[in-house]
Length: 384
Image (cartoon, rainbow, N blue to C red):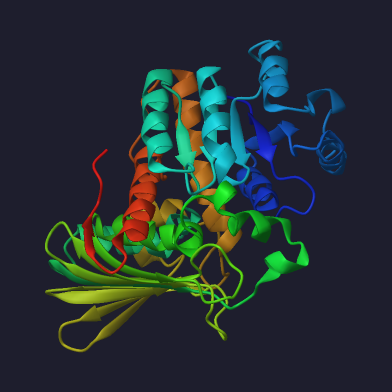
């Protein structure tokens, strides 16, 4: 395929943090071009965003329906190849459904849907469409996270026994000051049944399952709302059972003064352990049973030798830090390579398929449903 993929976007209007991240990450490697969008429910704001991005005004649409109709009216060689959906959670399912059924590939922000019922329905739509759906659990895009996963897969730490994953953030009730993104995330009518656990707890769940390759089977959760006036949880602590018998701890909190965006994970096995921190993403610590600590640093030759996935996710030589945008871009790189393969009529390779998909989205919604239902009791993950 000897052209850039054409990208459309729904959401991500003026002042939207995550929409800007998606746009920059998607285009980082030069293989994608943003050409169309419906950036806001308010047409004036959508056109304002299109002007800021220097887009053709004819391809700035006032609604999702208008965008689908407008793009389908163009020749196949001109219309968008895929659409990124960066709206509040309540819009994910209907918008993704509409684009998939119209024949477009989709990149979707997490959590995947408003509830588990929608997630299961979306899986059927994805399978029927034959299109790629990628979910931006961006923390799996870090090279050292991929190395950690591959070391566990290779048996370097033995059988996994203990998994500790945490995601604390500072108290910052900015929803009271008119912050648009914070307002919908704390509104159960738009974000769903969980607050903190839906927003950042799903990242912790996804990271634990990605690195270890183990599914959670049962959770005993204690959720709380610590900031007065909030309608959803802003603090949660979980005991977790995994499918191989491993035990785990997971907590996510948005009431931790002194923390910023401190996603951390430790995995301990019969022969060793490892740990990684999102705020220091370019290093991975691996612990030996004899008390030794081996530190891997992103970009070194050893990383490429041990893990092709980590090498593929690395852009700069060692000593030049890579971080959030690059990890996000790695999700887009693999997803868009899979889209290219599909357009070219071939099966994507294993490394190209290394991105969160609809099954990971269902796991996230199962996680949310389980922690909300637990109320201090052991609850098994729902089927589906």
